[in-house]
Structures are given as structure tokens and as C-alpha cells.
Length: 370
Image: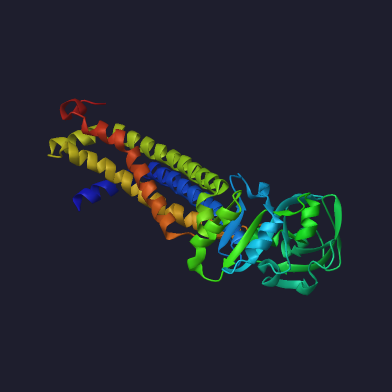
């Protein structure tokens, strides 16, 4: 109890310095939490595009990006006829542009695709999809920034399309996208006879291994992965995750340096006090424990404050209309625990040198220190 009281007293005596260190840890934790959560949310949303009413994804083997994947149309036709398959839908991904909007995601799909059948249609009739090659359906966000409604003509890339519907989805990428009939998308992107992926749903989940084996045997250039397996192995997702943790780690490192600076200054300004503690029976371990304790308290308060700031910031981003659907403010408990532990370890690491320095202070010499 006396030990804890001494730690809190020392922090209160230098409250401005302590508050600055807490703020450094707090903003580092908030930045890490926000970056990691936003990127994980983006990965989750892109994964949900692929797993829309499906369990497996079939794509070209050894491609770095699904936009470069080419799956022959006859593969989709054959796979859809396998007895174990409930349905197999080819999907073509592309990037298109319009005036003032350089990047719009395009989905070339069939009328039976879940994106068409299960989305909430705000305008138009889903039964009209793919009746004409120049027909498109817009996500509600795409309709908004293209200023398009049912029956409008929209310029996309080098062609003009007729809007036959507007639909609303929870996924930001789809809600800001353009849905074309598969044949139209193949012609538009000069990828006739191919799709980017095939999304597959099986009649029985126990047939996953057998399905993968059949794909490997009949289509050596293709690979089939379960949705969760694809999310773990896809190179672009790994890069995004590594980037998020690297940025967050740099933020925590800066926060740790702030703690280290605070602890060093605290030791230098309390050399005579430390000497008095030594004279009164405090051991080297106890002196080091005081420094580590102060750092731990600063780190815990900073981490908790950072979690609050980060959570508030994520929900604030969610409320921005332009980002609605693109930001998932859900924070996983495991991520919160990891961030707390990393913040605590960073703070303790920052106190390592000051603690060792304090432990080496000799009482007789320190009492003469000015």
C-alpha cells in the first residue's frame, strides 16, 4: 500500500509530465486501434463480397490479385453441374471510371447471383436484369455520386449505360459499385469467355475436401479455397494486415519513447530523493520497482484513454455519410487485449533504462548531488 502510494505521489508531483506521457500512449493506442480496425473491416467487407451466399471461391492459381484472375466460362458451367454443388456463380471484377470519379468497382454477375437476388432494390425490378447488354444496376451510393436514377443514362469509362435499378447493400464496396450483366462486363473489360472467380455453395459442407480435389484434377490452373482459408492466405490481405500493425507499432514506439523520456527526467530530478530512500532501507529492486510501477500506471491509464478515443473516433467515422458502409466500427475483444498488452509492454520497456540507472545510484554520492 505504501509502495503504491509512493508511486501515485511521484506521478502527482510531476502531473504535467505524467499527463503528457499518458497522452502520448493514449494517442498511439487510438491510432493503432483505428488503423487496424479500419483495415480489418475493409478486409472483412471485401471477403463478404466473395462469400455472398457461398462457401468456396475458385480462382486462377498463383495470381497476386483477383482482378488479374481469369477463370474460363466452361469451368463455371461444368462446376455448376457437379452433383455436390448447389450453385456456382461466375463473377467478374473490374475498375471503371466516370467523370469526377476515377475509381468505381464493377461487378459482372449473372441474374441468379445473390447480389441481384437478395439485395434490397430501391428502384427497378430485379427480373429485368441482364435483358439488354447496355443495362446496369447501381449501388445506392454509386447512384448518389453519379446523380443517376431509374431510367438515367450514365457515362462509365468509354461507354454509356442505361440504369434499370438501384439497390442497397450493407457492403460499402458493393453499395458504391456498378452491376453489369456478366456478358456485358466481359465485353467491356475485353475478357470474353472468362470471369475473375466462381463463388460456390455446396449441398453438403462435408464435401469440401472432395470438391477441392476435383477442381485440382479437372482444372490444374485453378484453385479452390474456403472463404476463411482465402481470407487468411490472400497476399493483398496479408499486406494490409502487416501495414496496419506496422503503422500501429510505430505509433506505440513513439508513445514508449515519450514514457522513457518522462521516466529519465523523473529519475534525474529525484536523485537525492532516491538516495534518501536507499538510506532508509529501500533495496535496489524496490527502487527499480517504483520506476517500473510509475511507468505501468502511465501506460495503463494511457491505454484505457486511447481505447476510449479510438472507439469514439471509429463511431465518428461511421457517422460521416461518405464513409457509411466502408467503415466497420466493431472492435474485436482480442484486438483490444492485444493493444492493451502492447501498450503496457511498451511503457515498461521505456522505463527499463531509467530503472536500471536509478538502481545504480549510490546513496553517498547522490546525497552530494546538486
